[in-house]
Length: 205
Image 1 (cartoon, one colour):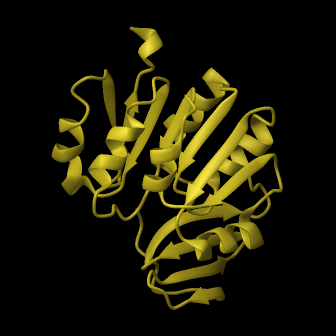
Image 2 (tube, one colour):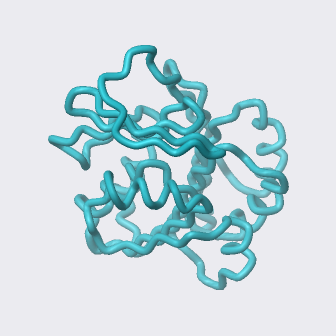
């Protein structure tokens, strides 16, 4: 995660919140901030290219596995959505995002109009009613909410590949206590607080 810079070239869009959302234009880049923390940075000249180092191993995994369907919990500025729309257009993508303002900002400024579905719903509610097994799941929720552990346990009922972007490393011990039944690897990203967890598909055992 990166703090908002002191100098902003242009404020494009703003919502007082909570949470506080700001969209800035910095040269050719559009940047989305949530409570002062950058959530997404998009090059308007190459919108499918990721500028977020913590997403690189996730995108590499997507490109290697080419899953038929992807479940994404948490939207941000839609980096994953733009990548799938451009690189994996045959993959079905469902994104679950609680904050309607985040969805509105994405659809207005960041969306490439691909084959995707965005649901304005909490992760807890979606997971409680989900009956589908997804071959690829991404948990990218910030900030973590009260009761996130129960939602994570429901996520771990998925038998496919699961990626977790833990943006709050103070919860690392609690998260790893939930992972004892799955084989996983933790990726540390240079100059980032994020911890990226790659949880292997149970089919790989």
